[in-house]
Length: 414
Image (cartoon, rainbow, N blue to C red; front, top):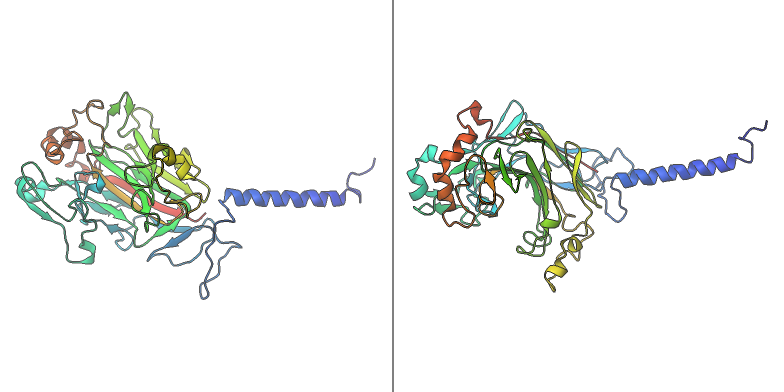
């Protein structure tokens, strides 16, 4: 019986092995988000060489970034919250309401943001507990501070100073919003944030990213990445669909101007089983951001994937003929081809429609105390506190239930 491995078959086997190795290499590159059209950062003279043959497509900048290039899989940002690092996380100080006329006042205070047992807490408190209730309708709230960590960070929408009146109450809730705008910005990578959302009517936790520079223009032209948003209401629904703690959403905002936004084409939700809301424990909110796609997941379960080409995705030519494309100089992923920074915050209420009015929405704990078209929404919210404040349980367990809790934040290079 003649052996298969004779001299005539050996060259054929060599060819087969070589082709197989090349195919495997191509597949590995494709899986790693490889794209030869994407410029890879180079290691400058004087910086230690990379421990890999080829740099990742990921870029990063900021005061805590010590390298110009990374190897695929490098952990390039991590905070396990052994302490609250204010060089890593800048607190925003503003009354601006996030562009949504929200009801909170963001500041740098350990009453509202602190670390305990390796967990970062953002806790809401009541302004009236410190100033008295009369202050809400008559006081002057000026948040201009005298040190760099206390400067007002957003003057829009009367964000640095407001005067209370009987019809225009001051922001009644104090909370926190932190960001890595100075310490860490990145383009392309894998993000994972392990967090537990708060419990309490009209609380609005968010994990999101904004552009380091508005390369393509002001919002939403340069993009916004909403990794996770939710609502603290235990039983809040529209047409039977839960919008509260059993619901988390992810969204991309993009468009040529503020009133032409393509977010409807890039939004998705994940619902928990009934009675097992995302407030019951910690969950991992994940983003894989490559030069070819953006994939959003919760606990490793994919929620949404967007393949780029955002001008076509948003159908802007069809929706507003003649409008200019701000991304003509960008690539497939524009505006999401620039560096972004991380934001974590706990907002309250607002009039932009994130909390639909009741009706058509139904809130098991009682009616929503303000309407989204009300000129006195802040006052109406505060005066309706007998319904919503007990759901926050601020007097129990150091207000843990109403607090947005974050276990860790991690970012890896592709």
